[in-house]
Image 1: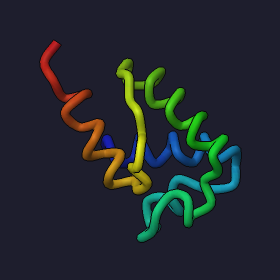
Image 2 (image 1 turned 180 degrees about the vertical axis):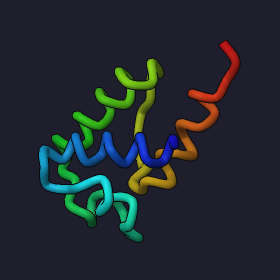
Image 3 (image 1 turned 135 degrees about the vertical axis):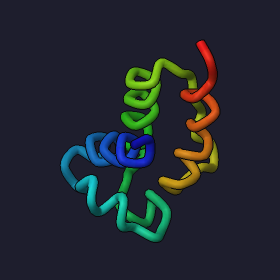
Length: 78
């Protein structure tokens, strides 16, 4: 669901360096997993485009942290 969608966006933002399965299985930060600063920029753009929200990742550096940040934004009533 949301976690899988975000993991797929992380994989896409990594420009082929990571797979969705690797992102889902990781127990470390996205930086430690290999996501570069350019990857983070791509990820922000992809999240904003895919979910229609504005987000600043700031110090969030884990898949669970991203999902926790996005959850209230994408689940809110229209």
